[in-house]
Amino acid sequence: MAYTVTLIPGDGTGPELAEVTKKVVDATGVKINWETAEAGSDVMQKYGTPLPESTLNSVRKNKVALKGPITTPIGTGFRSVNVAIRKELDLYTCLRPCKTYKGVRSKYEDINLVVVRENTEDLYAGVEFAQDSAEAKKIIELSSNKIRPQSAISIKPISKVGTERIVKFAFDYAVKHNRKKVTAVTKANIMKFTDGLFFETAREVAKQYEGKIEYEERLIDNMCMQLVQKPHLYDVIVLPNLYGDILSDLCAGLIGGLGIAPGANFGKDYAVFEAVHGSAPKYTGLNKVNPTALILSAVLMLEHLGETKAAQRLEKAVAEVIAEGKAVTYDLGGTAGTSQMGDAIIAKLK
Ligand code: NAD
Image (cartoon, rainbow, N blue to C red; front, top):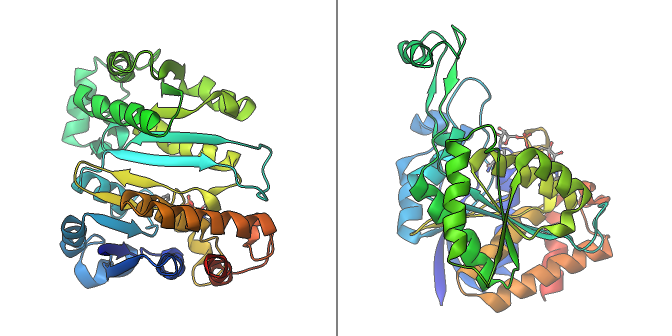
């Protein structure tokens, strides 16, 4: 069977990573018609937007996409294309498995954590008001002067329905993958209404899994320390958007860095696979960065397509190349380039 998958190469180091990943996936023997779709800062001039409607339509049509990283200007310029794709397609789950592979330089061994991050709400909802705007002034007034004059304001919405579906995803994932425990993480002692609602809803969902999957809660600050000191205590971790974003990078650090941390975004209808890392712009065009994170994201994509055997073979090939340590990129202590590491993985597949 042949699949049609949208390939969004992205910008910065994205296109070189996407090219290598495509070649590696093709080498598994799974037949994929790649439909390339543009997005990112490089296409801004051509389309007047960094996220053309045709790109979203391609994902809507094919239902599955593999995506390279896309740069987001800080402070000014367009809003995050990555966040926009997740919102437009209602990809409410961001799944980030964090697993140590033999041969990776890390202080820890045998880590096997899964971060489940809510993708559509929280401070990433894009409800922001500029300093001195009429809206900001109104909110300052409503706050009974708890907010200082001339503040810029971001709104943090957390809904019951949004929380229910992400926590349910975490528990269903735990059941399906023989996991033992789900840990919900917030700062509910301070944000009693928003993060409080997240915990309250998570507890209700957890009741449906009693006797099957253990449930516990942690505060985000404590969780950061716990993960650095005792990462083996944790299994599946579910969090609102911002904490999930930050904790994903922390967990990537535990397993040897962003170069090997994969990810997947799931909604009811669509799935977009992408690495945790960004566009690493300083390395653009240098054939230097590690393709593993995007290749392992493609492993998640093959699993999603039902190509379990190909997914297992590809993960094994990646693990062997990392364990040998010869054809690996700089972040894994080697001197290979992006394409050389990809070629070594292809050689293992043969
Ligand atoms: P980044 O993840 O791009 O890079 C941070 C550092 O991590 C790099 O300088 C590099 O040292 C290392 N790194 C990242 N990817 C690597 C790889 N594949 N191999 C080896 N080392 C790697 O983070 P940043 O510098 O904060 O962000 C750069 C841009 O990417 C920003 O515009 C940001 O908004 C965007 N971003 C996009 C996504 C996405 O597309 N989903 C995610 C995060 C950040």
